[in-house]
Length: 343
Picture 1 (cartoon, rainbow, N blue to C red):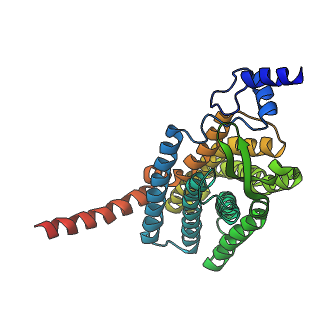
Picture 2 (tube, helix red, strand yellow; picture 1 turned 180 degrees about the vertical axis):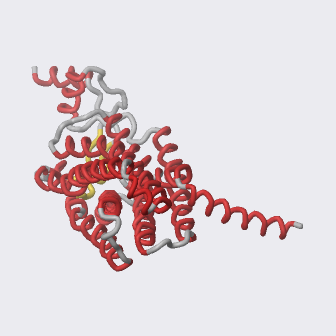
Picture 3 (cartoon, one colour; picture 1 turned 135 degrees about the vertical axis):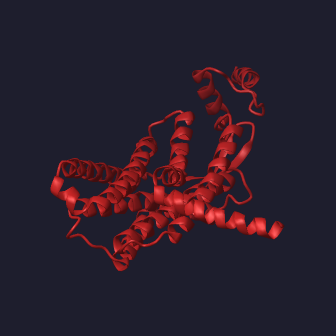
């Protein structure tokens, strides 16, 4: 009797086949019988691969352009020099996010590079760059807040800015330790594909990392998002009050207009960051609480973060007159030199 049942089950569920049941009930029965996991339709679809590579190219060229153009801008005092240094480091962090994400696409699933050291290094560096971007946005917002609220008393020099940058990287690296530690190579038996190595958290092997993930998520995403929103609300309120002050406009008419322009760019950068980070933070929260969400939602959350990493070039190009002028002068000189060579 048992042999006939086993034969009937095998007839219903061919474990070597790449065709799987459609209904959820049958899929669970299939996985239980075959002792394997039905693989996703695709870890990375063709559209996702093309999009990630496109965003990688835009991020590298755009952020490198911002770094070089900012370097050519004249330093109008220590505060503008400090803002340049913060934005340049933000560009480095954003560019690194796209680079590390694309590296993780290559080594993360069923690759000859899917080894324990590579998994830990790539995952840890990806989280470090993401967290550093968040911290540097906090530093930029705090710098603009102090410069706006206390324009005559506040001063910042290169030493303080370097300390802020170093703190951001070390703070992010500290809270990325769980990824360096808990991410590892996991061999999962996938139905129809055999044993597939992939980089994943250790909870696939039974380790409970919920508290650790929640702590890391709170420190590197939730707290920065709340801080950035509160600081920028305060900046907007201060600017609104200063608009009605005739004495303030008479004292610093030109400097005030330039300061408002810089603040507007910072507000736009932080708004893009918040909009792109909230879905990603929500995805990480669901992941930490072991709440299953559709793969499409996960893809959207990750790609929004990549979009955030490409935003700097567009924000500076379209909204900073000084940036556009310097960029035009830089390219004009290069084009003129090229024309002279061709003559």
